[in-house]
Image (cartoon, rainbow, N blue to C red; front, side):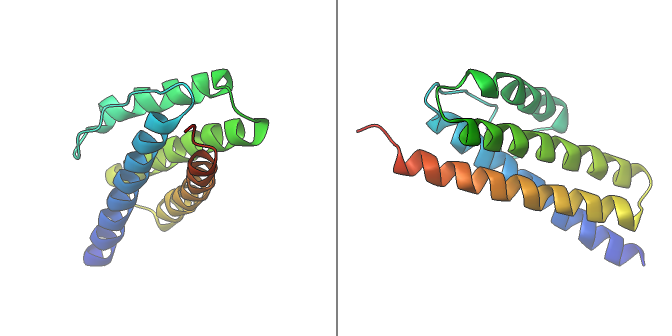
Length: 124
């Protein structure tokens, strides 16, 4: 059973890292760029405050309401996934791992939609 849990935790960690990297790229392409720590193995203690800050300033970006909500939603889903991951790391439960996975799916969907909008509306 522990091997299965380890595999799930490894998959969640990889997804968190992937989506954080996506957020770093998106923040660099926003109308008002936001720089985030971009190290491949950034500790959550550095990433979490940066993600929270992006969620707080999302409404200050000069873009549409839908895009603002995509940025905000992507951030809060990523933060929720990180919190659930941390809880699983201290005491694994399937429901927590599943919750982290669902939050990661929502974050990825929102951020991919925003990334597409940013590419389409990129200033020449």
